[in-house]
Image (tube, rainbow, N blue to C red; front, top):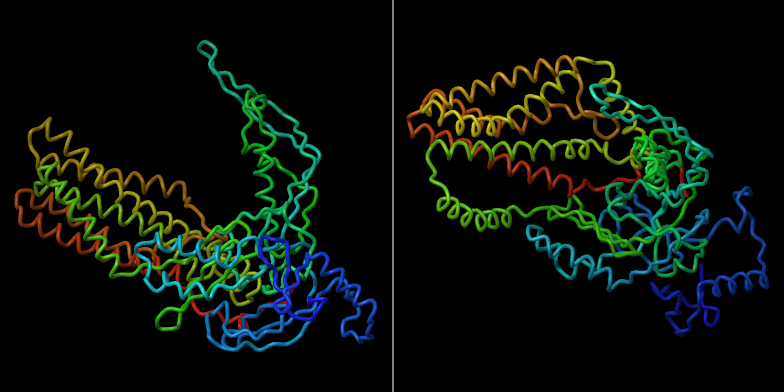
Length: 560
């Protein structure tokens, strides 16, 4: 611990000033001077100490208090002895249990540049722009719960081979011939890409940590415990190998951006070609402490938590922002009423036009819901956090089980891909109906027949898409190369799709009965509105997380 050389009081690091100040006598020092003073005092007053771990040298560790939450098991480190009265991870207002430990020093540290006041301003500026966010998140009292924490990050250095060989081709017309020229380009890429950072704490969501990126590693310094005065640190428990593949991918993309020039483009070389040909000589990871202002907010029932984080170097803010249903309804009505009035003034809304508008809106709702459910599924299963998965043996087993099923069951892949293409065909229905009705009605002078032909054209396209899909048997993959089951999405998406189908059938079966048009439109609007509420619930699932239980997750064999 860093004590004041004059009075022995607690020291406080002042962000952005390169100064640590004594809370009692007001003396000020640079962190480097304070560390040298500490080492000098330790030399003059040497104390013999029996070490439990003889393999770890004293100059490779630092002394800290580890505070553990009795509610969730989350732990933070501090060089100060002051009691901690709330947990940064679960938001519990409890006194954390403390014990003195020696921790392995990280290699480097970026001191806090953003102070408490700047952190509060950055957070409030962010949440006050979110008009649908709960009012409780915008109160000044909430920002008092921010805590400055040095988060451990794996910082990778990816070495590149001396040279890579890139094959490319260029095609051009020469008279009646198509000429393809093939090239082989040797590119010198010796060197390394440094400063690729990923958080090394499973407690810190990958999504939040990446939202705060980037940190400027050029401004990092050798670790000095003096910078931790009045701040905290999280324990690292994610293995170095966890993010190595991602670091290599980032390095390959940066190499592609750096070496590609106009002369290479002349020979058809693209950035993707260089990225694919990239070869590494070595990958090294080292632990650094990077500054983050962190806050946990419990919901009203106390069973979920939202997180907010501010980059302690740049002020970049990431916040879990749930949507308040009441605010959303009021806001939607305020926006919808003038839009409806403008629409009625610009367009003569006949029953057919109204049905087409409803179908288009339902298609948009279905598309948004489909995209949202991909993320919700992965978050619910916790498949979107590689750091957490690397430390949770039960989660690793579940991921392995799901991936195994998707590899073995080829028919399941086909069903998911078919479902995705059926969904895509439903999105095309409003477009085809509008285009077909608009074009054919002028040619054949029969609106009912034009609508019927348009609908059956859509059915024909749907069949063609299914046949082509069964032949290709391909579908997009997601995080961890997992595919979200279409059956999971169908539980929600059936509603707007059903609305589209009902409106389409009414156009065919009851082409001249306005009552059926209006009834089908009402049903479709209700189904679409129902889906919008599902969409909001899905969004809130992404922003309100289960209370963490760190002591029960079954990992922590890699601590830094």
